Image (cartoon, rainbow, N blue to C red):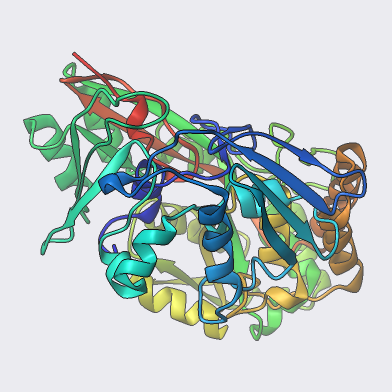
Length: 467
């Protein structure tokens, strides 16, 4: 319902999970939320959550109980039309053991369960009473949770207004009201911040905007690198040249990432691998493709393209995509290709990726928390659109088997070994080319004096401190 405002800005302020990502840039660090503690059975099939007592829903709708948790999961599990019906398919049963104890039983082991279900989008806990009184449609327009802020309204301009929930179990928020505003142009957002019309903004790496904000003494900026948010080259499933791995490797060797870093201020985390060692399951012990123009040309000759070939690079009309596209086009031209850039509206570009009607494109994939989210969504054969983001329609039985094994393995050390083996295979086949890990610039001004930046653009309003 909140199509003009990022849901990840609103969710953590209105709702809670049983377990949540700890506010901060690392989405794999979990902490108790509505559940004060939890245990897992030895076989990894049964999770038992003990709820906090006295947690209050907004609008005077009473205390959270185990029945609300059961209802929140079952309303999605029983309706195939719900967005997260498939995500919850591995849950066998959700039971209220007593008023403050919930037991979730899985059909098969899932080492990613706490990150991909419990603390992620499917795990948001709602008020059973509110949904039953209002109905799904009305509840979507006026949601009720237990979070630090209570939903007030969605304005006709697409602004979401929330006010402090004084009964919040972690304590009364310092800010009394927050209005979330979608500003489509980053230059306009920066101007509004500098004038005082806005107090906090996110910018996704527009070079000019970042320079302007950093130069303003009234504005404080914080750069957050999202290591789980990989900006990459993606290949079209029917574009013949890139079906040859030698061509994909040639394109990789022709990229000089130093030029990208120089063009985007503060972007110093280039990606030579798909998941860096800063994250669980990440490694650098894989094949890489450093800048080597001679090697790129040699690979093109081996693949039967001594004179190159025409290539259309599809790109969304936004930053940093357009800047990166210009750099890549020039570098691939230097390798002997005839490159044309096709700048498109983001919606049209996404539609082309879904249909597979493109040569090569660049985009970002953000799958926070557990590595299973990223590897399944981008590389599993079952994740071809519309089910996932495997736009290349990449298919490899060994890769599928490793991804599946990573999910059902609960031993953390063994899982890491599986993901290292998986990445060695992927970096050999190169179904995508890693470019860099995306970053965002959090900027704020008086009266805001501090706040904790969140992973995946999550806005933790409860962490705001004001003068």
